[in-house]
Amino acid sequence: MKLIFGVLVKCISVLAIMLATQKVYGVKGEEIMGKEKLIYVMDPQCGWCYGNAENIKELESRLDGKYELQLMLGGMWLGNNAPRGGEGLNQFIKQHSPRMESVTGAYVSEKFYELTSDSSYVFSSLEPSAAILAVMKIAPEKTLEFTGKVQKAMFADGLRLDQEVVYLNILQELSIDEGEFRELWLSEGNIENLNEMFQHSGSMVSGFPTLIKYSNGVYTDVASGYFDLKKIVRILGL
Image 1 (cartoon, rainbow, N blue to C red):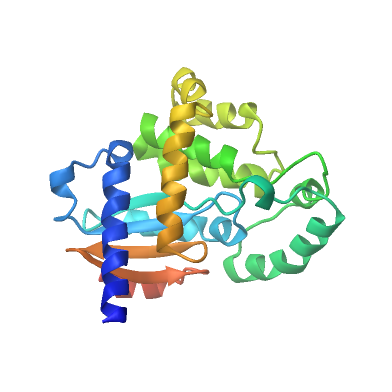
Image 2 (image 1 turned 180 degrees about the vertical axis):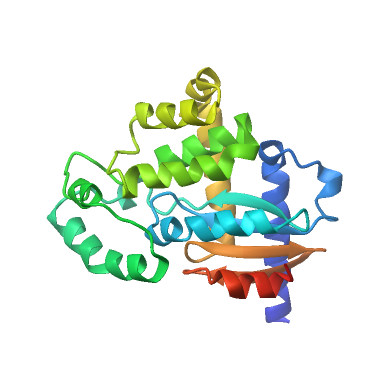
């Protein structure tokens, strides 16, 4: 009974997430139970999420309407848990990042390593996550592309994700309304929505990235950590 109850709670949590975020994704309440969905839970400060960016992009291109891909933000580093740049963080990243780079083929620049030594920068998930959520509301069809460019801005270009100009440059590139973004980004309402999403995703997964399949009320873990695209495609029958 304990196991069954645990699965039931997770299923209810998935539905709660979808109901709570339907205004973001443009999903009507009556459509939720009938559609098959892939929920991608990630964080813009997560190295393995960056490493999986190309696999997620390729997966989206193969869905062909069979699944609706929904991105959820995890809130990996927030408040006092967000690390400040410095020698300790730099050494930690240098120790762990090469394996991610080797496995995924993702490029991590020397500029990023320099950023990890910058004691004036706090690697908070709040600002980039709020930016992604704002784009979900403004231009949901461009959310995944925007997210990938935000990740690249830090890991490949070594840019700080607490600066508005980083996002404005990406918005211009993707032809997304800058005025709407400025109004939303760190607004009280957007941060409130974001914290709700963090709470829901925290009840769903224990690490990032995680890919979840939701079909007819059933919740299934598809992948976590490194995403093996061939295996995922096989599991999903694509």
